[in-house]
Image 1 (cartoon, rainbow, N blue to C red):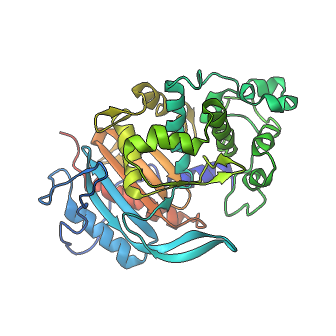
Image 2 (image 1 turned 90 degrees about the horizontal axis):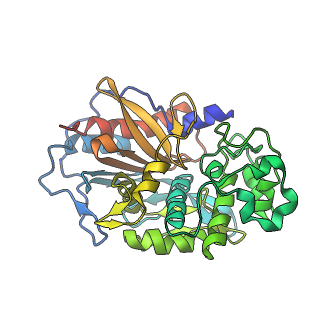
Image 3 (image 1 turned 180 degrees about the vertical axis):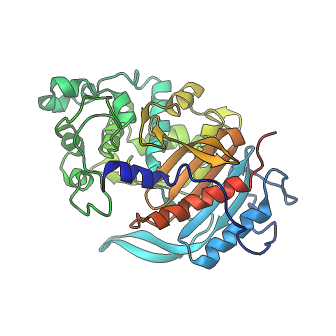
Length: 388
């Protein structure tokens, strides 16, 4: 699969017109009222909110359930409150000690940890921002090779020009074949994880373009980033994240797998959907959660500002996607963490809105599957009132 095709599918139909027929018959307006839990979220009152069409969202959820769509959860936060929460039953990939990965049918709920896949990258961006805020990393202009003195034999004039900013923007200029169902095991991500030293593998790849010249999706960049955080802070990225990000957010349960001792920052994080929505709300609020500044506003603004054009419809910041959707005849910008299989956290600042979705389409890159996934976001936008 060509890079531009892969990126377009990952982001969904970013400029699809937000319009469509009614989903089905009327549903109770409280069909998915968020439960009050001791997790830091304030929730929408039982009487609802004129800014959110609960009945329309319930019809959307009923349609997903009745159609057998493999959507696992849909959560919506509006004006800083959790406004909608619905879980479904579907098939998911489950790690198995003896068989690698098994596909099982699961009834998802608020306590089910879900694989974020490449949404993990955007969370890693927040962790890096905190490491910079706290002085562990001097700046994004640090040469990557400066963090790996043990790999000095791999240095070259071209590789010496690769900066941390190029890692964060997927613009290192290294030859890379990303893992997709089409590539099977014949890809650099698999080879990297099998290598004795994954960072050596990535930095040993040939240079195909000057650093910073263009966007080229490369999960190997996150292997370097994870090692850099460990070297700079003295702790694996997941342990550092627990202290500086997850604990302050009240995220007390998560899993972040490791490969050869380093956190799999490219796709190994598992969170509960309510905690995914917290990540989105944190970004929407400029790095604040419940009156606590967790990530600097400067980092949030820098990381969610366009650095490179990714394809015809989407741009890229520091490990965050930037897209636009048509709503009522105009373009509405959004910030997104997007992961394989239908995982997404989309933030719409103009609407004071966060939408978190999990799904199980890991091996399905068909246009129909992506249309269905993006359709959830489309229906949410239809059900949210525009700003006054």
